[in-house]
Every structure is written in C-alpha cells, then in structure tokens.
Amino acid sequence: MATALANRAAQNQTTGLLRLSFNFFRNLSTATSTESPGASSTASKKPKRKKKKNLFDVAQFLPNWGLGYHMAKTHWTDVSYQITKINLYKDGRHGKAWGVVHKDGAPAADAPKKISGVHKRCWRYIPHLSKPRDTAPTLMKPTENAPKAESELA
Image (cartoon, rainbow, N blue to C red; front, side, top):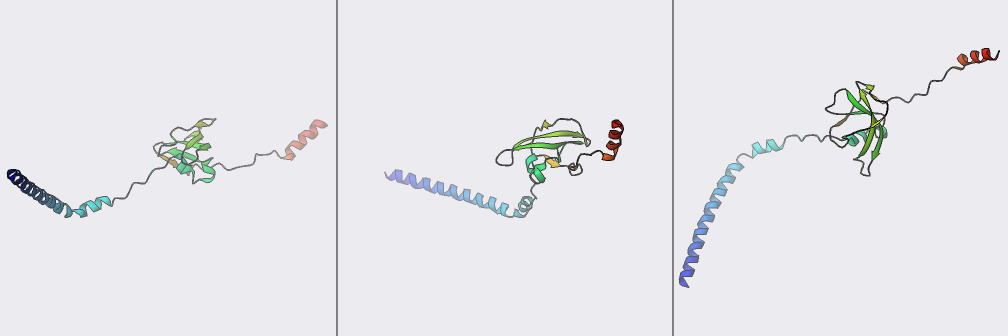
C-alpha cells in the first residue's frame, strides 16, 4: 500500500510537470498572437459584400410590384424581361413571374413566358427601358368619317 501511494505521488508530480510545460507553451503561443491583432483587425474590417437580390426583392420597390418594368439578370447583355404577371407566395420574397422577352429593347416574343431563375440572386432593374405609358387608344376624328358617311348616303 505504501508503494501504491508512492507511485501515485510520482505520477502526480510528472503530470504536474507536463501541465506546466503545456501551459508554458500555451502562454508563448498566445503572447505571439497578441502582438499581431492589428493585422487581423484590419482584415476583419473589410467592407461586407452587398447581398444581391432576387427578382422579387427588386420588384417590391417598384410601383405595382414591377408590372410593366424591365428586369434582367446581371450577366445578361441586351436581354431583359418586361414583367407581365407576378404570383407571390405569402412571404413576399418567393413566387413565380411571367414576362415578355426583349432583345436590344425590342420585343422578341409576342406572348408572355414564365421566367426561370427568379429566385437566383442576380436580378437588376433596367431603368432606361421605362415602363410604357398608358395611352388612350387613338380615335378617328369625326370630320374624317362624316364626309364619307354623307357621300354614301347621297
């Protein structure tokens, strides 16, 4: 029993020395890392990248949820969609959208098409292709129609 106690005391001393040596190395490693927090703080102060927007994030700030406005993905050149219909889900950030394809500012199709990739974060509003103005249908002047009607009656 006395030898068991002696062995245990010897083990405690060796583990105590190991702990001291590990603490010594830990202190050395933290001392060197505390000298360079200036370098790491400049790296952490980088400006964050702006989160890109999906089609619904862009459309929510436009009047009438962007109906009639032109939108395109950021990597598209000379191609855009004129939004004709939006079907939103309850959260307002997801849904489905339809639009007419425009190439170089001119319509490339007659009928609206379901837009693919509306949830991808790469959409932008195209301001120079403005919303079409609501114009009244052009009416024929009554003076043009009246002489024809009178001549036919006579």
